[in-house]
Amino acid sequence: MELTRRDALAALAAAGVAGGGALALSAGESRDDGETATEPGGVPPPGPLTDDDVAVLTAAAEVLYPSEVEGVESFVSEFARGRAAEQPDHAAGVADAARYLDEWTGSWLDEEFTALDPSDREEALDPSDREEALDRLGARAADPDPEGTDAERVRYYVVDELLFALYSSPTGGELVGIENPQGHPGGTESYRRGPNDGE
Image (cartoon, rainbow, N blue to C red; front, side, top):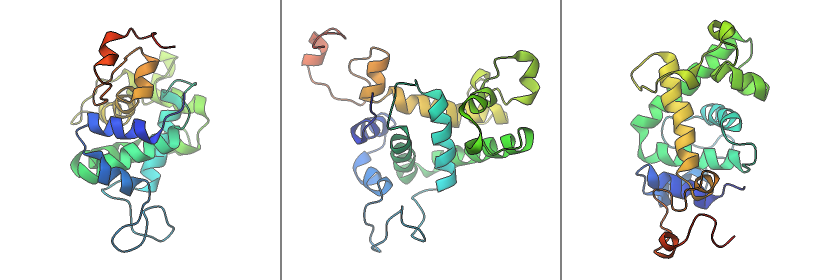
């Protein structure tokens, strides 16, 4: 299942972002100064998110999202940068949590989060062996709290942020049988069909 720009726009709408202008900026379209957010040496992306922060979010999404989902990198980048453009205070929390996650794995696992193998990234977020829990952050088991412990903030700003983005999009909604996810105007016909009609 391919995540598209339409999915990112729907997820932004569900997050309360009027996505048009923000999504255009996030996709690296021209700014007033003629440069783009994706050009080397160009102006920084909108809000507090850096390329490294978005790379951490993408690396997390690659282990949090179902394996059949494709187009993760562009989807995460457009959603994260689009939300940062209009909700910089929230994005500051996302950036802080992403940087903490990268620093934590660097200290405990001797590799930045983005450099870890997918299985190690998944273990860092949610250890399968509870005897090794002290060597893992355990963010997926933590309660989401933007003002809580480091693990709780990573759960809120990284894990839950990414899962919200996915499952509020049309493609993500299909994965869990949501015909018309929040923010996606499917029309009245969608309410008269079952989730499998039209396949």
